[in-house]
Length: 117
Image (tube, rainbow, N blue to C red; front, side, top):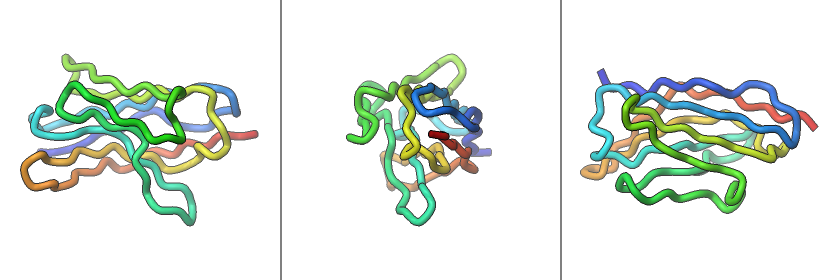
């Protein structure tokens, strides 16, 4: 069964850090771009960071210099570390896997991140 299982998130103070994990189940990692999106209330879902082709990582301008996305290949997991958190980082964060072949999207259930000022 294809599944993305997310963990992490919660309530964090501004300036703090968090780690979000996404375990990928039932997919061949190299067949997908895997990463994290987020959606704040009243806003569109946006890309946060994404591993492309196993070796290249894209970051949104809003998190560059504050975010690191990496893969734990032994656990089939991608981990997003986000530092110097701001209230604007408050959102529902979704793990995403997009197929290289047909651009089909697989989504996790979402995990809430709330940054208090």
